[in-house]
Length: 108
Image (cartoon, rainbow, N blue to C red; front, side, top):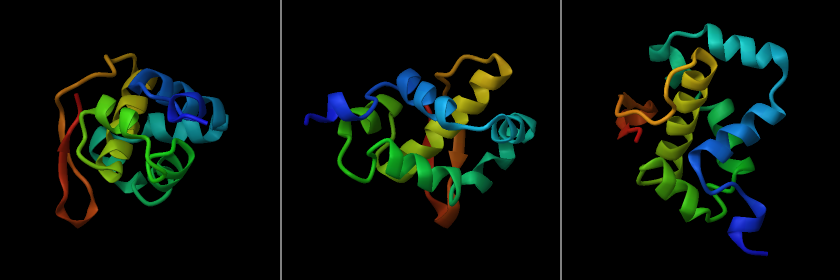
């Protein structure tokens, strides 16, 4: 099966997939976070996103769509865009952020 049939390949479709799997409580928890606190979701939600959206199984189309250089950074771009959707902000942004371990990325 090709990557495009199994996993989302755009930022918007990735957010749709994540939202579809989240409970109302999880949605409320993410929406209530400050944007600066999103980095704290790297190990929980971020790990789930990397596995469930194929970022660790070779979904280069989605990594590229996020503008990130690797799956870890791509998952943080998706989380940031998810939070932005909950708040009604544009999902594509140039907000810089730092992931654990000193990695930095920029959502696009």
